[in-house]
Image (cartoon, rainbow, N blue to C red; front, side):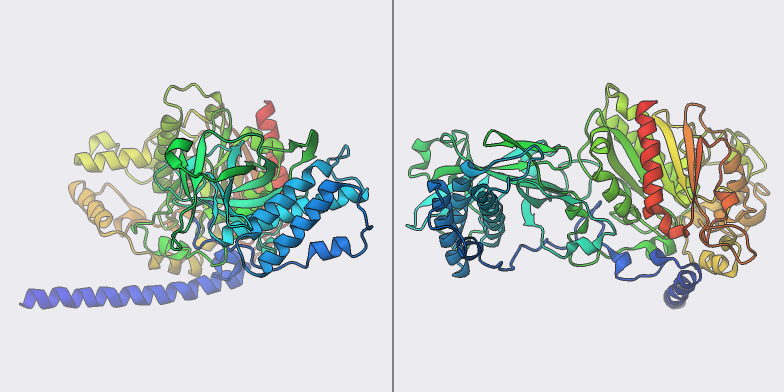
Length: 635
């Protein structure tokens, strides 16, 4: 009974201590954010952007805003005779479509589809792919674009758009018809097209730079939701698409759609491969909605003319209405906690022939750090042809040697899974980009440890000490490794290769003391010290080091890491901030001194007048990284 009371009392004390630690930690976060001008350390609305490289928090909205009548605008000063029967028919269909949409009737879908397809023959294009300034062609262009936009928006609103197969229509007479969907240029399988969303206005301000270009078609966002479909991918992933509508030339034989009369059905029933004899009174296919991949498609042919495709590659990274709960601070405070967002993630399925570029975030951060930079890169056609974006997320309260070991295994597993026969040379040209502590994690992927790291904390080699099998395996995994052979280039962005004075300041000391080490790791450390008296000296005799401890300029592991030789086939580059000197006047980015951010033997060095947390999305960083990546593909 006494033992039970003591245990309960200890648990209550531990819980209260954790609450106190949590309160003190947030006070520390406020101080750091105020002292460094670090927007990512302060939990503002801007810093809570949804991590769309990993998952979405809420569904995207459909377009509910009613637009002014295009029919009224076009006919208010139009000539009595337009001289083109197709254009006259398109205008009449547009009028009916707008009337039925105002009445909230799903028949508007069929009218909008008819208006778009009736305007197609009148379209003309100039060399740049835009409509001529001749009135019929201009009117046809506007009718087509508006009708297609309202068709997709209302099909989503009325739950009649299945992006895998088609749009279910109801004609004015109550008959059923459908528009089949085809996918062009995507790395995704047809079954990945789980849900479609329009791109509402006002999302552009969610990103500092928004990349959208005009052209034919309507930009959409498609959502993939099958978490088990691809390894190394989050449970929900958005991607861009552009819709083009064409009339059907002949009846589709591969897909038949039946529209259920049940009012509770959320989407049309589509029966792939069913024959007309089995379906009975099947609705007729009246059009084809082509979904093109705007990331890799520049132009499309419509009505025997070549058109620039409308593109909105930023929408998947901007369309989110509720901030994702980012657990950066808990990941720092409690290194042993489980977090589904950790590990290696891809934003698209693996594509042979494209070089992986792997982004690694820094302390008190996550992969959202790279949204702005990824957005800039995805707007560059040649980058999309040559590279694929991956990212690695780790627990930032961990010592970086442990995070590096986790990343090493993740990359090895990914390469083995994607290319088991080692037939893709692009996988052997991998580029790592690490910000802040992520640069140290990245460096340990391209170096040979030898005995340097273990020797920096222990006075005996591993084969001379008493260890269990589990203890030996863990030490070997953390402290003994060879460079990954498939990594050929690393870019360090504001990385503290020789430490940061913040780690030795009272802010760093308090932050380190707030970290709650996993119990099993503490038990293992004590067991190793008991089995091997005098093995360690310094900090390890007191407690397990945190990530902050390893960033101290006088830390032995950090010093040993700095001296590790880089694989001779790997090129390294540095991007350094000097926008905020330290209190003693030392040139720095507010956190990392310029001298510490330098790396010996770097192929290039770029100095940018900005602070530490702005480096990842500064325009000059993007420009320098683009230069490096362009060189990487040409070397």
